Image (cartoon, rainbow, N blue to C red; front, side, top):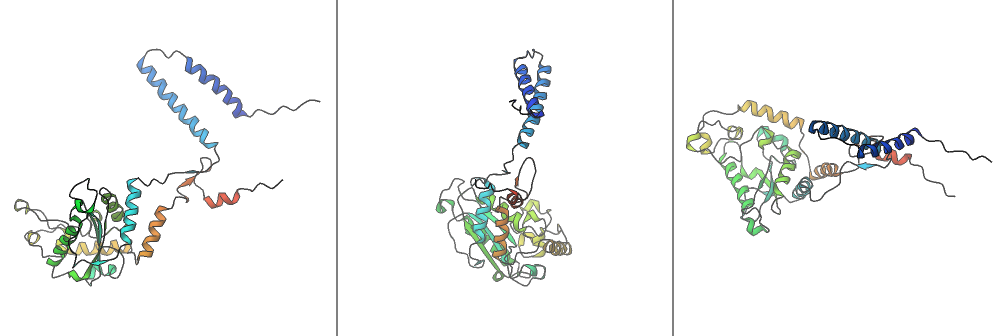
Length: 306
């Protein structure tokens, strides 16, 4: 009785040819011409890349686009930021000296008209960091009193703006963190909240300025000092970077496009969304591209019991 021979797929036939060709290439004399060798190498790398892409397309198993790395600075920044938001709010008017460096957020709950959309919201008007006295400090004491000093420095500036602001209308959150993590946490918080007083938002920046020297009085007044006069060194400057009308319009437009977060629950949900790994964008198969994980899972047939 004749036995049927299994048909050879075209890809299998080409693979056999490729193996033979690869053996011939590896044993071929490439010569000594440098330009020729470079051209051959680049062409071979291109072919290898195409073959690798074909190989991946034959793999039906799903692949994550990233692996969660707790040591990654972005991951650490997100975790520190989440922990900072979980802290209690304190009056900015009464911050005692304490050891430690880290990150902080300042909140406004007053009646200054441009800032009314932030009143009673859990959305900071400013976020920042305080670096330790010593870069490699391993505990709060060797970090120095940098965090409390920075908060009190901001409080001092706000107290000077008596015509527009009251220190009693400001609260803050802060978190003392291990040295080295404050920068990534600050970056995440600024990108997350886009506070109107931060320079990165380019609206009402200037709170953190320490003053101009006597030979730089030609500098233009910061938008923060334009909105909140009172700091002596800023009042000696005669020209604004931006007019009050422009700043007011930019604040209103920004807070309309980026609605303030109402409470910590809304903030936590957004941060949790950022941390989810399995979704349309972050999980894929080389053959199908980015598809819904649950959709593919539903299509997987369960082998029947025999």
